[in-house]
Structures are given as structure tokens and as C-alpha cells.
Image (cartoon, rainbow, N blue to C red):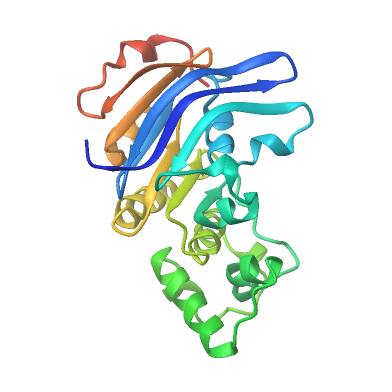
Length: 244
């Protein structure tokens, strides 16, 4: 395997006394797509929420173990810095409803109190929308609300918003589950293109999607990592288990 940008060592996660992840060990290679698969409730989303330290925001939630980003233990870093370096896109498109397309893309800077001049903001917005394969569709409508876009366009806007902060890793939590087949295809094409610039961890319950876009696949079951390896060689016998 290529050198990992992210190493997870002996990670366990809890909600109160309930164990959700048990002793996970996983290395995520740089500039590749790693799919996280498994039945509903097996801990997929919890795993990626631990990776960018969102898990601990929930009441009674805690995590134990180590997660290294470029050999730095993320649990010793400021969580805000971690979330800048590890972006996340959620299952349902969630552009900020009162903001324009332009302001949605640049929102991370404003929310973090990072002041930029207009020229730099314009450059970041255009670059991020181009990376998200959305620029040509919205360049004449930048000051319209993002909620006026179609579902697929909204999801690409959310990807652009995450990319604007120039993360090292992009976490995608079932990003196409709420989209139609055409929009899903656009997002999948985008994922394959984006890995040239950013490492991607993709939660999906779709076997075909994992086989189309991922380089590596991890399979979770009842909070445990059952198998991890090259997508082309991972055994899919586990996937006869009920999935969501």
C-alpha cells in the first residue's frame, strides 16, 4: 500500500456505555479513495465522525485510541484545525439556506474568522467550484441562493464548500443516497477526479458504487473491522449480510 496520510490505531468509540466501534486499526493511503462499507448501524458514520472529531460533540460520546494525520495525533490538536484539514460532506445536501452560492463556498473562512481580500475570495470560489465540476453551471448565478440549485448541484456545492478550505482529506458520508441516478453518476465521476488533489474516505452501502470509484475497501460489522484491502480483491461474502 502507498504511504498512509491517515492512520487509525486501536480506535474504540462509545455512546454512553454502548460500544459502537471496537479496536479499529486502519491506514488510509494518500490520494486514493477508501470506501467504508457494512450493514446499517455497524459504525460507518461514527468512524468518519471520529476522524474529524465530530463524534465527541454528541452528548455522552467518547473515543479512545489514536488517529494520526501526517503523523500528528488529531486528539492533541485543536478540533477546529482538524476540521479544516479534514473536510466532510453529509448524506443530504445542506447548503446554508440564507446564503448565496458564492457565500456558501467561502463560508468556512468567514465562520473561522479568516479575513480575505475580494480578489482572493473570488479566486477561491472559482477554483473550488471548478474542482467540484459546478463552475460552468453557476458562474452567472453566484449571488442566487444555493437552495435554488437541483439536489445534485447542491451536493456539489457542499463539496466545493469543503474543498475551499483546502483539506488534506475529504470525508463523504453516503453523498449520493438522496440523489437520482444521473446526479449520482456526476458525483461518482467527480470523486474519481478529485482524488488527484485530495484523499477521499467514502461511506457507501452500494457495492457497485464502491467497485466503480474506490481503490480500497474496508468492511465493518457490529463495530468491528472485518476486512480491509484493495477493492478488487476484497471478499464480498460479507455483503450477503443485510445492508441499509
